[in-house]
Length: 342
Image 1 (cartoon, helix red, strand yellow):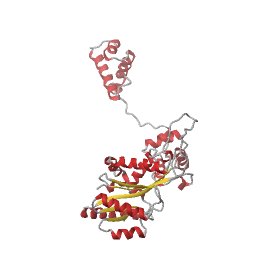
Image 2: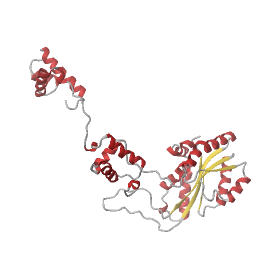
Image 3: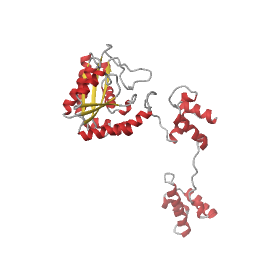
Image 4: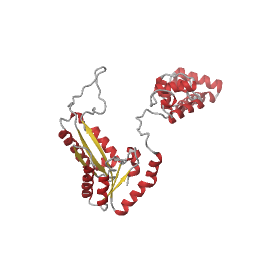
């Protein structure tokens, strides 16, 4: 009986009493056996119907439950949640820049004078649509006006020009892998026994220059030396050759991308390559950054025995991604770069 929803329980009570009233069932025991309930329940329902009529058998409307997490009225709750949306803990005199259960608990006590447990704070936040999330990183030097102009005016014009010229539109970026970088992620281990990962201990690195297109194409070069204008020009030359047509390249404002040597080469190759620079401090707008993240997640540079070994593993991974265009296309479906899908 208790496992039935309220409406089904109400219907069962009415049917039992109706059977007794019609005379088809003469005793509580018979009714209990027919309807599969206890004899005691049958008697309770019959007496309730005699005292209060049919209304006494109906399910009572359920009132909203207010546990300890709902000690805040609408005004106080709105003030706390709005403060969490608009500010960080350090903005209102606390330590840290992330909202934890402890910092929210302190905020509630300061704003409302109400004390809650950290567990209660977590349940309260989930009840009102908040979840624990890894925050995105943004430079305080980023200019929102420049980003808005890029999204609304500059990029649409670049994309339209590339379509009109039947050119390839690609996104390029440079990244490096270092052998002294700790392996990413975490590992399960017995409590109190920190897991151990054996690493090479030597310090070396390799650099990668890559470019991706929304149709799933990927181009790259892996080199051990520094990233220079010569490397950039060589990469652009190979990119245009492999693409087989004019290429519009979108990249960040790295000093090499803005160097005189690169722009002198571009002036000599205007019929092959056009370079467009994105707004400063806005890596989240570049889909190629997701290739870099994918690369660093799968290549554990600390396990490499030499720079040649690391370069070989990096090339093997990037060659595999070249044969997986669906994954490259997936980079463009991330929330901040969907605008780049052609």
